[in-house]
Image (cartoon, rainbow, N blue to C red; front, side, top):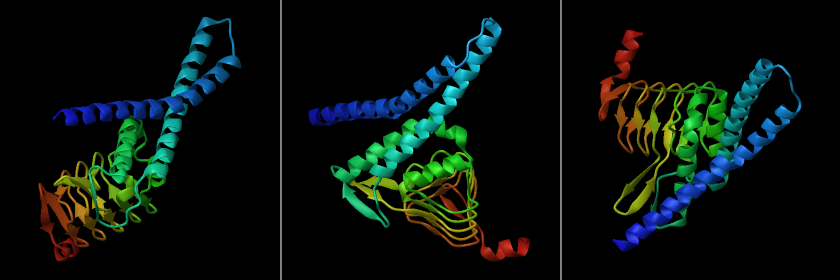
Length: 241
C-alpha cells in the first residue's frame, strides 16, 4: 500500500510538470507577441488606448491557443506509440509511460481544442498527433483520446461530444487496439467507441450509443443503444431510400 501511494505521488508530480511544460512554453511566444504589439502603438486618449489594449490581449490569447495546439501536437508526434494492431503491454513498461504522457498532454490541451472543432485546425492537430484522417471528414469532438490509434477514412462524420478510446486496462496489463471508421460512416453525438472497433462503410452509430470493444459494425447498418445493437439492416436502409 505504501508503494502504491508513493507511485501515485510521483505520478501526480509528473502530471504537474507536464502541465507546466505544455502550458508554459506557448506562453513565452504569447508574451513576446504582446510586448511587440504594445510597443508599436501609444495614444494619449485613454479610450483608444483601452480599446487597443483589449484587442492586443484578445489577439494574444489567439496566439496562445495556436501555439499551445502546435506545441502539444508536436510533443505527441514525438512521443506517441507506433502501433498498427492490437497489442498488450505490462502496466509497468516504457510504452505505458509514453502513452500516459501523451494522454496527459492531450487532456491539458482539450480545453483549448474544443473551441476549434469542427475545423481544419482540429483535423490538422489530430493528424500531427498520429491520427489518420481522410478527406471531407467532419470531426465535431475534442475527445479523440488516443489519436495515434484512430483511423478515419474519407467522408466520415464524428458527432459532437463523441468519445474514442483506443486503450483499456485488463488484468494488470494495458491493451491498445486501433479504431477504424471506414468511408462514409457516421458516429452520432455523444456516442462512445471502444478499442478495436471497426465501423463499416456508410454505417451509422446513433447518438449516445456505446460500441463495445473489438466489435465490427457491418457496412450500411444502423446501430444504437447501450451497448449498441443493430436497429436497422442494410436492406431496410435501401428500402427507405
